[in-house]
Length: 339
Image 1 (tube, rainbow, N blue to C red):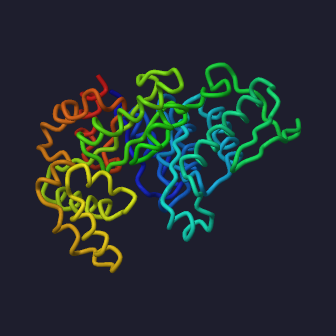
Image 2: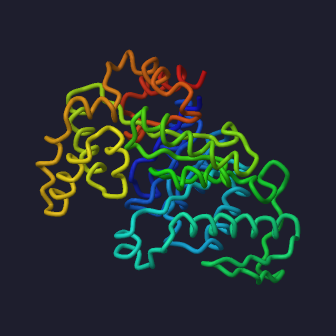
C-alpha cells in the first residue's frame, strides 16, 4: 500500500517547500486539488523541486476543459517530471459545472468522461506513435493534428502513448467505477465512503468494468482518501464534513446502502437553506464510525491497514499535509504504511 499526501490550498510560492518536505517525510505522491487554485500548476513545481515524489491532480475538473487541453498539459508534465505525473480527473456536480465554470452539463456524464479519456488516449497515441488522429464520438470530433501543433514523443520511461501516463478518475457511484475498471489506471475513491460501500458497491463495479475490457481488478490502482479522527476537534471536523457530503443528492446511494436515506433528505433540506450549523448534529456516532476511522494517534497506522486491507492500493488522509505540524508523526505513519 502506497501512502500519499494532499497539498493544502496554498499559493504557488509555497509549493516548493511543501514538496521537498513531503518527499523527505516519505510520501509516494503529492496530490493537488481544484478548489481555490489551479490543480496543474503546482505539479510542475513539485516535479522541479523533488527527485522521487510523484505529483497528481486529485482532481482536475474534466468537464471544465477540453480533452485536448488535458492531453497537452499531462504530456508536458509527464515530460518535465520524468514520468512522475498522474492525471486525476473528476466530473464535479452539475451546479458547479454550470454555475461555477459556465459550462454545459452533459446528458450522460459517464459517456462524456469516457469520450474525454478516449480522445486523450487518441492524442497521446498520435503524438507518440504517429497514428492518424480520427476520433468521432457523440460529444467530440477530433480529427486535426498538423506537425506544427504536435509535440515530440516522450522519452522511454516518461510515458509512451496510450495508457502510459496514468489516468485516475474519481467517483462515488458505480458508473464511474466501471469506467475506471475499463479504461483507466486508477480510481480515486471519494472520502465520503464506508468500508461496506467500497466492498459491496465500488470494488465490484471496478471489477465489472475491468472484465469487460479483458483486464483484472489489479490493473486498476484504488486510491482511498480517508477520514480519520484522533482528537475531539478532529471528530467535530469529520462530523461536519460528512454531514456536508451526505447532503449532496448525487451521493445519496452511500447513505441508502446503510438505510439512512431519511437523514440524507433532512441534510439536503438544511443545506438548501444554508443551515450548516444544524447539519453535524444529524450525524450519529454510528454514522461517524462508518465514514471515519476514530482511533488514537499511536494506533492509527495499524487501524488504517486493517480497515483498508484488500481495498486500497494507495491511501491518503483527508487532512492535508502541512510541514512543521507533526512531521515525525507523519514520517512514522508513512514508514509503517509504505511497507
